[in-house]
Image 1 (cartoon, rainbow, N blue to C red):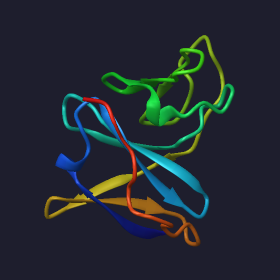
Image 2: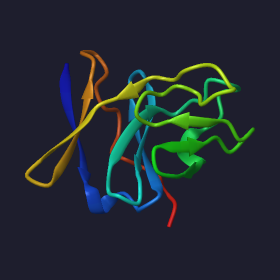
Image 3: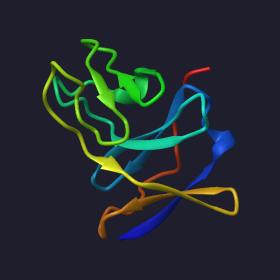
Image 4: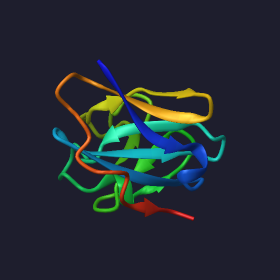
Length: 117
C-alpha cells in the first residue's frame, strides 16, 4: 500500500467531492456534513455513472444517472440494488488527507474537480 496526499479537509466542500486521477482510474473523494471523508472508484456499479457528480448524504452518494444509492463506507449498492465499486481508505495526518492506494496506483494529476456546495 502507498499513501497519496490529496489535500486538506477544507479542499473538499461539505456534501461535495473532488476527483483524483490515478493510473487505475479516477477516484472520487467525498466529504459529508459531519466532515467524514470517503473515497470510491468514480464508477457506479450499475451503468458506470460518475459518482463524483452525485448527491452526497450521510454515508451514501446517489448516482446522477439512475439514482442508485452507494454506501460510501463499503462501495456497495444499497438494497434493493446490487453491485459494488471499489472503496479506498482515507487517513488524516496533521490536517492533511491521504488516500491509501494499492502499489502501482500512483497519482496521475492533482485533484481536479470540485463538485458540490
